Length: 364
Image (cartoon, rainbow, N blue to C red; front, side, top):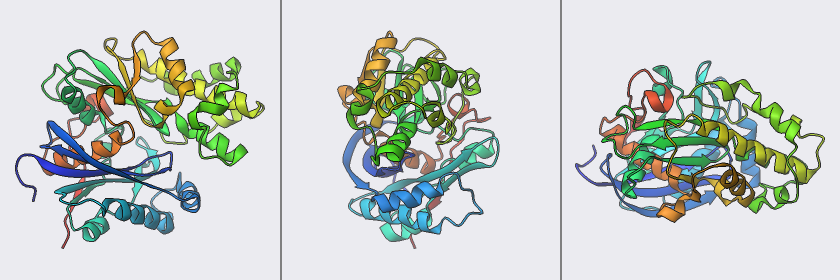
């Protein structure tokens, strides 16, 4: 189905922050990255966002047809802009994630996208990993390994994605493959932007605390921060993963604070979760490369830089695109799935054996 050698893969990501759909092209053979192509973004309208928010936490028996239609149509609109694509990686929209309970639930039908786009689509990336005992998340680490080699890294480094939930990937680029023992360690750090977004949406009707303007005016309430860090999640050894709303009571911890102090405290909680996560790295990383929306929050970045011994820098400083890295990851993973290569392993999700997850749908 897929030609040999280098191909042009198109990936898409609709994250837990519910801002919109990112789409980006990667040139790869499923192992090495040869280059990056065009990218595009399709924001969700506020009306669409409300429907998607209402779907969060819902499982397979729920009627999520309205939300699913929004997800599929948004992806068709943005992915249809690209030409000369060999394969598409479609993550869908995660609405619920409970790997040790009911599993993982992403909405969006890749078979429909294949028909609409006229290209083979790889989708449902997480189910196989969960079925084999894995967390099903995070899935970008194999791509992070390829990125580390693409930028010519020689010493261990870490990628920190600050989306709705935070996740970290520690990489040893000296290893020959991502599934090799000691090549990767990855897990969710804790909540990141989602609680901050929910706070400013609830109180001020805003999408996010853009540029950390609100948090900059406030101060961190240390009592609330200490209660947050007492959560059992921070005492679990990785691999481990979270649902977007796993820390929903964070909002209650700042309920009595004014807007600025509440935003500052939630930002401090996200940063403190990362500091706890760094304690699990096999060795201290040479640098921490930050991707996702959180890297645009100078308050968050300042908190991390002040507390860590290594440089904390946005991925743009090494030539990568922090807005599109997750979309690029699913382009890369789509090629791996099509070529029968693993997309996760014990050190990234806790899965019993290295596994390639994903269903492939071809157009008629």
